[in-house]
Image (cartoon, rainbow, N blue to C red; front, side, top):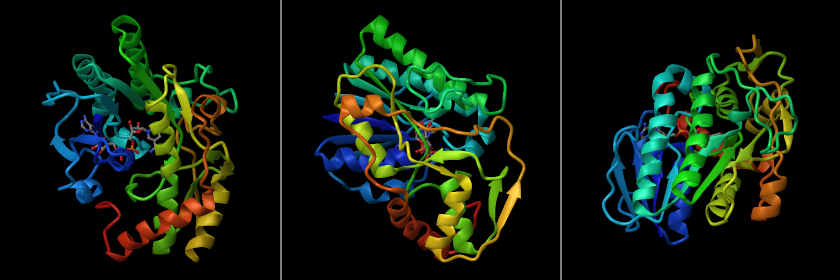
Length: 318
Ligand SMILES: NC(=O)c1ccc[n+]([C@@H]2O[C@H](COP(=O)([O-])OP(=O)(O)OC[C@H]3O[C@@H](n4cnc5c(N)ncnc54)[C@H](O)[C@@H]3O)[C@@H](O)[C@H]2O)c1
């Protein structure tokens, strides 16, 4: 198969490129580097199955030759990024989704949208099944991301229903692993870098809010299975194992051998207090469930950040 992956130079996109190439497919990566970096795909340059096109997917997309799949992963994804880039975030979720759907239709390709657990907002149902419609503040600061993704899902389903496009929607829950940007404000990378540097670990609120963390290899495996399945409706992929933010901080401190202090700050607006996937459908339909426990995932993630910290990159540059 020949597959287009947008957001290929990002955290998840680059791991997806690796997986599709490892399975013997050809991959066209596309990215405009707004939050991604060429470093994430440097190892693929020269790979016979890989080509890269630098392009903003909110504009008309031209890809020469046939495509069997389009995976739309381009979008700022961390709260710091999408709060700094509210309009590009709305545009890539709306215009970018429209352009990538149009491309998939023109090429007769299967389409997979990267959606998010953020479509559930600050959920009033716990854990969240796919049938839950969510609790989102459209005009709050996070609305730019949540509503862009909700629109993207609606657009994807419209292409499926109206044009008969073969579509998939994955609702991704918090994922971590090598190639996350250290300064993008996501909790796992934040804590690891703070611990490795001996800086205070910043905890918002009391740290009692819970999160579930999926190791990137588990997530990519779920997405790969979903892509090859027949399931059109949105599908949660995430690790239901819940940890409080405080527990994560303690584990990171232990595993890095750091003596960083904990620093408590006020909770940001609309920060969800709990979020946990119901993965009944992924288990039943895809035969998928997460296999990598948090401790093992951190063991496989910390060395990546240790190397970056040792190379002396500054927080902002990383
Ligand atoms: N990482 C997570 O935990 C998580 C959770 C839920 C959903 N997601 C979704 O997965 C996708 C990838 O997230 P990520 O964590 O890899 O983020 P990321 O920021 O590392 O990667 C996103 C990539 O998209 C590129 N991009 C953004 N706008 C673009 C545009 N207009 N044109 C071309 N390229 C563009 C960026 O440069 C970057 O390389 C996103 O759609 C995100 O919403 C991620």
